[in-house]
Length: 401
Image: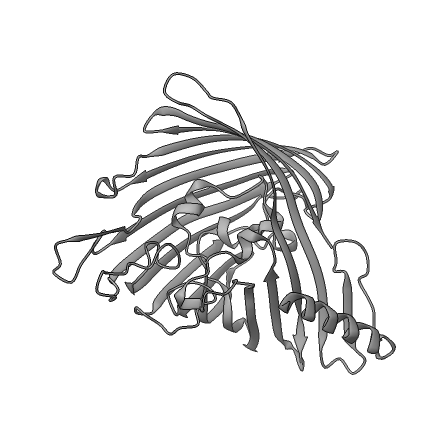
């Protein structure tokens, strides 16, 4: 109902204002509708997108692989609005999710409602090379997570990301960039946020979350912000490299993964709290069709096992701690076909009683209009504690207006 009303309102807005707007950038992939006010006091770009895929999975039972299980899903279906308000120095982004995976996660702390809002953030360039962000959006975490799901090289992100990323949160961010001489760039990003993830409406149960990230680009900026887009679609003529480091501290975190997972609620209704620390080191490299991304992640907690108020009896909740390594590379041929490969290893603290895993993935892509219209496939082989566990084949397409 909410989304339907939003679309109706936007359609009425579009029709009623068409004579007072300038329409531009109407080619595919640059937004379904673009408006810029005649007096240049605001702009709106509307860009829907969706991803559809099929999956076939074979589990290993200790002696052989069983019969395949098949699944067809709309993995993502989203409505994105962005532009500027009052001045080009004040930008905004609003992104809504419609698919089951986008809106799932209802609980008592978001009034048991669908989590439609992904991003709702304003970005103010208040001084040269300085920006202030406010609202709900991605924290400056590992590069793979900050890369939009629209711009992925393989069908989805790695096990490292699914286990240890810090995702979105509500708060403020300060961002700065500087030139260290020649083409050498440095960027700093700092965030202060609520610490419990997106769409939380019922107060702040734990402490706040603090995030700091620094990035070095020794050979200058990538074309079209390619450091946050996988695959070398622009075929960089000279080598481009970004190296980044992130530190995240979630004070008195109340969820198993800080921003996500179950709330660690005790039998008396109180919530178990523990400090969680996550660090990332990552890099993105591109040159002449070749791309490489590497990431390392590590999460620790003061107390991994949640306990009742006596400090001894386990509640059954466990903070997901450990470390992971993810290496990914690909080569884009001049005919816009690409082959890519990824290796991921995840190891958990022994106290979590979660077995370590490794995953090997081989992907094949066909870009019709870059990331805006593409067909992707990949096959993954996963081991659990060194033993055969699963083989998964995925095939899907993306369309982004």
